Image (tube, rainbow, N blue to C red; front, side, top):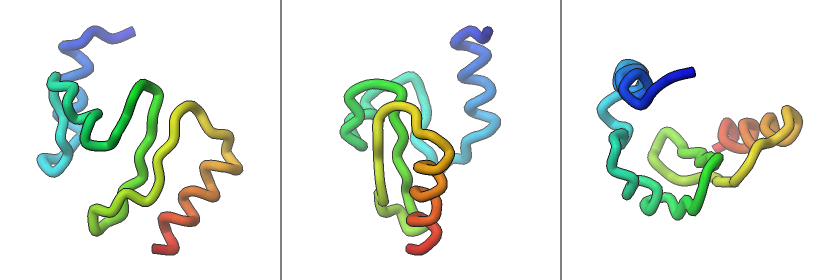
Length: 71
């Protein structure tokens, strides 16, 4: 289990400066995220390709990655 400080520190290590990260939850508004878990697929040229709520199975997730790779 992790606490907020540990999670924030690790996220800062993993995420680059081009990712909006922080304790300001307004980031969710940018992608119309109403709750979690939620995922947003963004292409290399910053286009939102797909988004969804909840957990996907492997087959469905592979389809989404194939879509992203085809763009």
